[in-house]
Image (cartoon, rainbow, N blue to C red; front, side, top):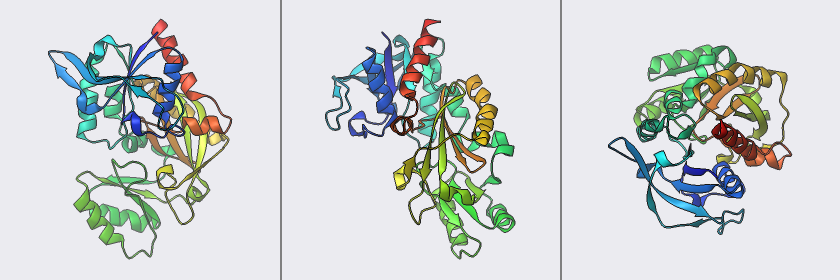
Length: 314
């Protein structure tokens, strides 16, 4: 039996029929493992010890509103658990980075997934630029003149914040869009970090494919189709999941990035592919496992815990 602590958003409020973290917790509980949950704000680093205020998650079941019974909060030394899962949602900000830095102190004592140092060093929209031959033309900058020049070169573009998530702040700017300069001003006022300008990929109307990789190997995929009139395919903003098959190009992309993920300890990752292009590598809290299973694909939560249990036995 493993002792597992999951750093996540409040488990009481998750959608049990869609949430990946809940699915992973439910699978672990069903295997007889001890499951504890905590928020990153409860992390403590003192005299070399990493602790968190956790609650034990009992009676996990896929019944919304009665899906978990939480035992009273207690202070737990995370060096005494077998596995810590980092699963809270972005934003990827200094609080997120600091939590990762604290969890790095568990190295050699507790298996932390994904590797917190690798998470810290691989922001999802930056990491992808290491594979520039797989990605659409992309610019990351706060230099407004550079963004204007990029638009002149590529015409139809996407603007989005570097550390956004869930489709937040994503805009399509067509060549004749008179709001372009106003959008640049809005980004400059709203975000301290650079923005991303990316050539628009028309294939997004057919869907944005999410491919899930486990230890560098593709284990499942779904397609996320934008709602009518929407550019964004994120399910948070009305995107619809549908079954999809992996293409030769998808496999080529996975073969290229898989070793880099495995080497860094990014055991559970989700990549986004539009048409023939890799657009993001999600390593903080990738989602989609329930949709993959619902469409007849692999039970990825089961595969994940198979991997963890095998790793712990070595």
